[in-house]
Image 1 (spheres, protein in one colour):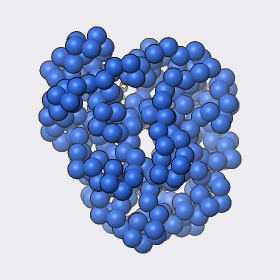
Image 2: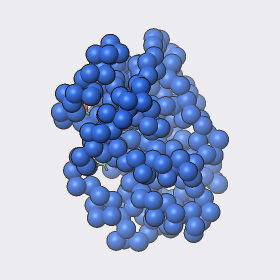
Image 3: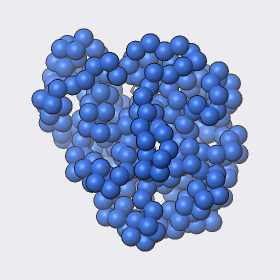
Image 4: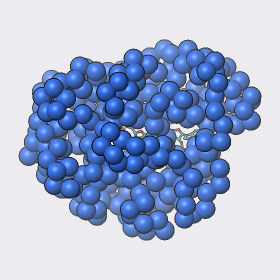
Length: 283
Ligand SMILES: NC(=O)C1=CN([C@@H]2O[C@H](COP(=O)(O)OP(=O)(O)OC[C@H]3O[C@@H](n4cnc5c(N)ncnc54)[C@H](OP(=O)(O)O)[C@@H]3O)[C@@H](O)[C@H]2O)C=CC1
Ligand SMILES: O=C(O)C(=O)[C@@H](O)[C@H](O)C(=O)CO
């Protein structure tokens, strides 16, 4: 794949509400200050159009500045943010989103997610109603969730009649979440993978990944990101390094065989940390 600084060769998908989303995005966790702005602009120059931020990353201003300073028009970009746990509730979600838009210097978010369900707080349905209202007001094009389980998704749909467009979940070869992806497919929810590269903590040395990389003449990180596409997810790898940004986005010129996908999924061993959304809560 070759990309000029003004165009992107990243293919797109259609969400259940008809919106178009790039098939890979740039995670921005820990991209802060001037260095972070530079890294995000580099990502846009390298073809990324989906930028994933959150109130809790404390970098919405940096993302907004990068959007303004980049050479790509705002309408070509797809900006995602997330409502933090401390802003759960109907009115709080609307206020939180207005504040996010002000920090981002945007009139509209392309996708807004409930960051964590925080079940002990018991407010994620009200938060979801707030997102539905924001979509009706045109402040957000698509709405979704993050770290939601199958019963939580069923509850949202049963109580509001609105199916999330996206569920952004921990997903990598060590935690392939096969059943949740199948459920998403059955109800039309797009899976997004967070920490898709397992934060470069040893995954790339695993034999099925190294062997597939050799077979296809690509890097292990590209095999991992291609695996996400093959299992039906949309990865949002974070890299502040322009060379790795380009490498990570260059995954549309090869595919993995079903046997390679199965071998990589066979690396399953569990979550990176103990961030089970039934018990792990973030405010
Ligand atoms: N909804 C949620 O609860 C969560 C959402 N997220 C989102 O998902 C995004 C991605 O997840 P994240 O946790 O950042 O982890 P990733 O799996 O994307 O890994 C990022 C790490 O891998 C390194 N890296 C990137 N590309 C390569 C490569 N080709 N070769 C070697 N190392 C590489 C990066 O370093 P370098 O920058 O130096 O390249 C960085 O240290 C986040 O940035 C955030 O937007 C993350 C966690 C939770
Ligand atoms: O990055 C995110 O979206 C998070 O929710 C993080 O807080 C994540 O849980 C983490 O990286 C904590 O170390």
